[in-house]
Amino acid sequence: MLTLDHRAGRFSTRDTIGAWGDLSNTGNGYAYVGNNPPTGIDPTGRQKLTLKTVEAATPVDCGGFKWVIQWILDAKTKTGGWINQHVTVSFDVKDCKDNVLKHPADDGKFNYAEAWEVKKNQTITTYAQGGETDDDTYSLTAAGDCTKGKVVVAGVADFHEGLVALPAGYKANNPDTHAGMLPSTANIVELGGRTRHMDHNIVATWNCCTRNKATALKTTP
Amino acid sequence: MVTRRLSDSWSMHDKARRLILQRRLPLSHPKKRVFSTDIAARPRCFASCGAVVLRSFGLAVLCFATVCDCHDANPRIQSAGTARLRAIADASTRDTDLIRAIHSLGAVNEPASFWTAIIGNPEFSSTHRRRCLFAFFRRHAYAGITLNELLQVGSVGEWFDDDQIVDMTHASKVPVSRVGRGSIYAFRPELPSSNDSAVYLRFSVTISKEELISVLCAKVVRRPEVRIEETGCAEFED
Image (spheres, each protein chain N blue to C red):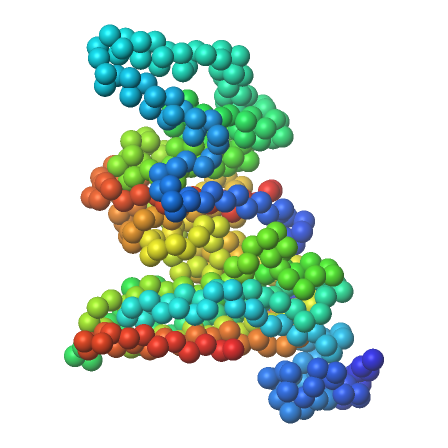
């Protein structure tokens, strides 16, 4: 059992997940949710958010891609909560003469937070409980022929155990985000009860200015 | 950074019970309608008549009778359908009865204007109008129809606004599949007191929002062959 020294803001016994399980506390098995107790709790010290690849990252010509994942908790949550992911996308697109172009999908809305609910005593989201496997899909259309460049999608996900309700402003089918039917908001706010960060990133680089068109993908994890 | 207190927030538990109704189009049957068995049965009825028409004029008369049979064979079912439509068109119908009536309608015999008239009528509750809006899309803007056919559906009315159509092609989660590279749009009705429900349309090819709006509002179709491949609903209860 872990015990928390409130004055020190850290556990007095070692976190059972190990020193390298939490990227925000790398190497420090005694740290407590990023040494930020006012905004974070880690009731068991064992809860960890991971992702399972449902469809491997697949390139589409000239910078497009698709990657489908499902969120999984290592242990059943005793209280339930919400997985919250902050998504940002950066575009770097040029024509073959190095003139900067605007990506056809770049509408300025790729900076938002989206959320999935996990019910009490579950390790998967409410969608997965209903039989769906596609919790989250990264999908981008091609930038077009005679272009080259790089697109970076950065997703930072946390599980907020014990969070019973999302803040006002999160709404499904939000026209200000690209979250689709997920509750989402373009106004990023700090949520309490965070456990551990899960990086969910994909980088696409392509060059369609040569005879051998190619798109390379790199994902994290 | 602004931090909201939990007491200020709304609860998904309290506010809504999510219903996700998916209507997926089988790849091997690109024009198959999958909304009800009755709809699937209707083309079979007419197809058998059409085969007879090709043989001779005399048999064509028989075919006409057969077509009439197709409509009159089961008057009990017909009258039941009419009763359901009457219940739907009654603003005082309870929500549970409305849901039951909509889901047991069967074959599409009513015009699209039946639904749009209700959706545009403020005398109906927002919930009643929203349910009719979803029924309108399920029954008249269904998977398999082309933009040209969508054009014939009729005026969508004053409740429709350009801002309610949102490009969801790159969205994290949608209630339709992502087969091919066609565009995905969400239609978010902003009826009075409406919630976050939306209808999703997946098209056979990439289509701009302007092109879609021109079909729905201006009644101009540049590419009549473009199809709605799939519709899906993310419906929330009030």
